[in-house]
Image 1 (tube, one colour):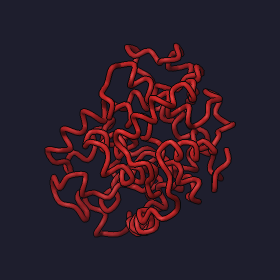
Image 2 (cartoon, one colour):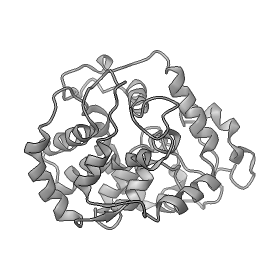
Image 3 (cartoon, rainbow, N blue to C red):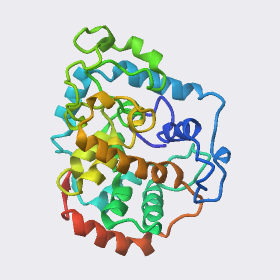
Image 4 (cartoon, rainbow, N blue to C red):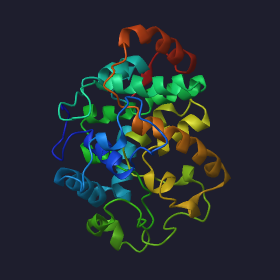
Length: 289
């Protein structure tokens, strides 16, 4: 894959590892006809995946997250529309993924088309189309540990359910008393909208979309990699009533995110008019990135 810094493995290796940790349930057939164990699966994650998580857990500190927000949420790097951003993301082609030879734009369309086939609302279909567009951070020079990976709150104790929790021993915040309690810098039931999640493509794209998608779509984008919360039941002590409502939407979205990968490529040009019309219904022609 061509990216700014991919020293710890392919961009999609993290997603392959998710399939190892969260295999497709027996009652849900993957859309390409594969059984769950036919996707790439490991008895143990390969070393470069472990190295990715070591870097991620070591370097995702409160200070780093504040700096990343200051750097990237100015959104002063490019001006482009959603479809143009998809084509920009398409310059990231993963040659190392054994489960698919499809481009990034085809992955986005597969997710959206699976949601569309199940008859969900138009905003939901659009959310599936754009949810991973924040991976353009790679093209803005971000290393992989700042783009993908399970997300988690910073500024409070790292929950034991977070994958490779042992690597947090190397994180300076683990020795900071202000950040190393159950609530840390937060208060009980403060609401996840007031919690700083680890920096990555989810948090970036959530901010890009904030003025354009309904609350459930924004929750799907921001929390789809927050596996300690939506799949492990952690951090409920920080939730408010709004988060309890949004959790149902995130859980509804998650299977489309994980299991829509297929070797049956969507016809990009045939689908483009439908999706350009859908994009125009919610987004302006140009956005700051």
